[in-house]
Length: 261
Length: 206
Figure (cartoon, each protein chain N blue to C red):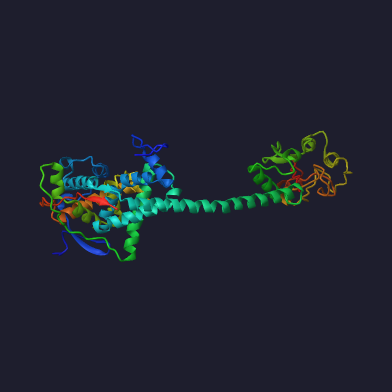
């Protein structure tokens, strides 16, 4: 016969306890009853078989906790409040440093914003700086009204959409409309587009000329950059507006213009 | 009672939130009221987890920790209670880790008290508070925490879950197992005691 029959071995806090298993309480109490019992809602007489003394124990524990009375010692309460006040003083001392850190952050953002307004930063950094400053209620020198706005125009000839950038005078949309139009074709269309895009500076000497030439001349590279908005030094020699990368030289009718250098 | 702005005392007890706000700003009446409202349950919880010999020391340490961090606390009474008992539980764990203090393996230590016909007193006399706390300490720690917080901390399964970092469903499973285990512990220790002299009534002071 196994000498451990009828015994439960368990480890608690590193010590071994042996508890005799009571056949009557072999099964666990169900969760709902346990919850009600711990809430003090199950009287010993109503407890499941084998758990009446547990219900009594819960009642005893509750009564025991309720019977503890708290008589505060003034010295201890004073100690608590002194701790609170000391901590509050330390918190106030930290605030000047926090204010200095905030002021320094605003200063850095203002500097970056100024550089962005002067066009001395790449567009991504410039936009990020402007956004950060506007979040703080500070407008950079280059206001949004002065800046090209970007809108997304669905490309009716492809499954992707293309992005057209316009200046305040809707220059880009004019170029886009012309590009999407079907009145002109081939070299003539390219020349017309280049002429409008470059503000008349282009003489339509693009090398391919058939349906537009891909030019990725700006720092943004993948999406192409062109002289569509007439920013000098950005457009390629052909003057044809850049075409977004995925279309390649096959000459899509949609255009992608990223105008901010 | 809360003092009014003109220094007289308010005849209506302030809410716990008002007392907590006063405690946060370092006013003694607020600290005292918050302490009064939670100290008994806190001591009961610590008695069940660490024994009566350590409970009041650990309670004091808990309150001092609370006072040091009260300025960063946000919430109402339920959140405060959960926070308080979380700190208390951490104090118990720290005390045991230090090795200098171990949970007491209390045996029944009757405290002479007159007999009573009150049914509650009869129950108390049969199964003493501290001997039951000793039975709880023999449970696995997570089960002991659940029983102590649910019964002595007077918390819901959800509140206990927040303190122990477990979902309420897990807490319900744990409390079911804990009660089953507690039933065995009580049975193994001879069942309800027939000692009419043990009574848990005690007064807590700092």
